[in-house]
Length: 289
Image 1 (spheres, one colour):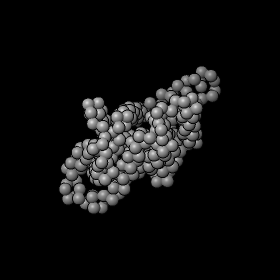
Image 2 (tube, helix red, strand yellow; image 1 turned 135 degrees about the vertical axis):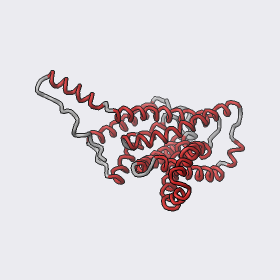
Image 3 (cartoon, one colour; image 1 turned 180 degrees about the horizontal axis):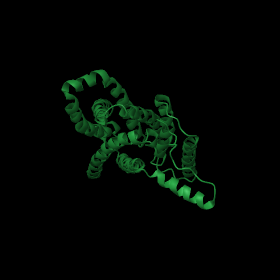
Image 4 (cartoon, rainbow, N blue to C red; image 1 turned 120 degrees about the vertical axis):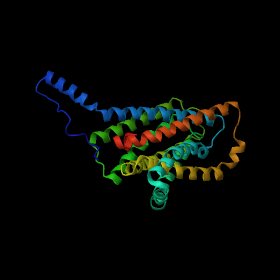
């Protein structure tokens, strides 16, 4: 796999202004292959799903409902319910048990990284504002590119690296501008929250690269089924240890109930996100996500 553009793309002609214009137009049209269009559409669906999850999480935090381990349990449960039975159907119970014995530890480590990244991501909403959480998308990209280079020896064109640097620089200027103009929201412990977000984005970067590595070598249902299984175990254990008391002290009223219904819907969005994310990894790459 390579991050460089395919060499079969039409060349840019410099013989005349009209030839240059036509060649640029033809080269632009060559971008719109079925694979590229599907990748772009999947990316937009993922953006909508992730945005809805962020907004719902912010609303829950504002209602004093900060239970990150409990929150991510539902997305893992949905993956387990859908993909694990199909995995058992394809492999048989004996084959599925062999998968657990021989490869279960790999998926356990992967899922722990994904789960803790999600936990830190949601936890950060209790300390900082939604604007600062935009840093997650920015820092994940260079970390994921570095991990892909180390794990799968992906080569990137210098223009791709430059594009990432420019995007991160622009986002940093945006955040700095909002801070200087007093648009920092109601965050009271933004430094701690930004630390959680930075740790989450770093974990997500490495996890996305490993997920791409696995999904290119194993069936999609196997990867997602195993992540659902081990994610349920990790989230249920951690929530019972860290959030047992918060279950009693969290705000439970009509508004919170409505938000939790929305959160249940967002869990379905998260399930869809994981499914489309894996297909996107096969079609494009994890830094694209």
